[in-house]
Amino acid sequence: MQACTAGRAAVRDGTELFYRIDGTGPGRVALVHSLAADHAFWEPVVARLGDAATLLTFDCRGHGASGKPAGPYTVEQFGDDLADLMDRAGWPSAVVAGASMGGCVALAFAARHPQRTKGLGLIDTTAWYGAEAPQQWAERAGKAKSDGLAALVGFQTTRWFGDAFRAGHPDVVQHTVDTFLKNDIAAYAETCRMLGAADLRAALPGIAVPTRIVVGEEDYATPPAMAEALHAGIAGSTLTVIAGGRHLTPLDNPDRIAAELRMLIEAAR
Image (cartoon, rainbow, N blue to C red; front, side, top):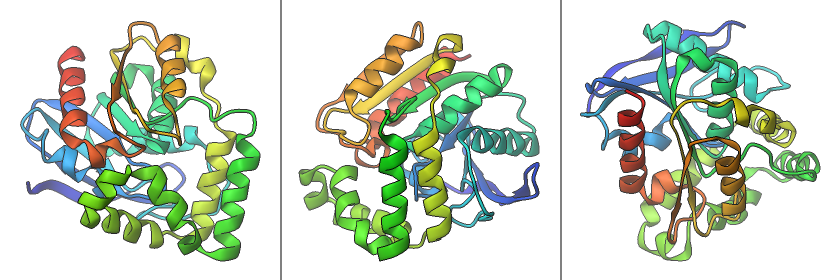
């Protein structure tokens, strides 16, 4: 599928973000990638949805081809970045979905910009990583700074993908690792600290748009219990647990994620 548009746009603090718009369908969907990924994270899903929607993907600040300003970062700031990109695209509103970090950003966007949120997709994510999260995420940031990102690859790949998927799809695994290793360490560390500090639990009761929550059955980064807490907190939401899925279901189950998003697009019309 050819991109309709690709370019860079400055958001409110002057940071330039890379973005891409694909598809020709009538819906509008903005997709937010996971930590240490980039817009290409969504390519398998975008390829399956171009007839249903026009899709905005982008590199979050600190990631990919986007600017990497000094921190601290917040998920609310990342949500405002998306609002500014939607302004650039001329989109008053959209279905917004994200995976892992991107789900936190999507939730923050929905809380800050409810009139611009037509539907919400929360994939392999959480509203809060727990009481120990600031310390745990700070430790991960510290390890990246002291030992380099390569020191985290073994830890990450087993969290991202199940054993069978890693064995059967080494190309996907390698591409994900290559993207991870290209990250700016300082920006990665700031984003880790951002996730450790994120607490969006208070936003859940105010979500009043169609919401679909998806989690891999074997996800131990944001386990099904965290998805169940989202489901309990957002009235009318749906919860799907993908058998055998681990933490990056848009990569290991793109057909299923695309189907979930199709249903969300329909519900948000």
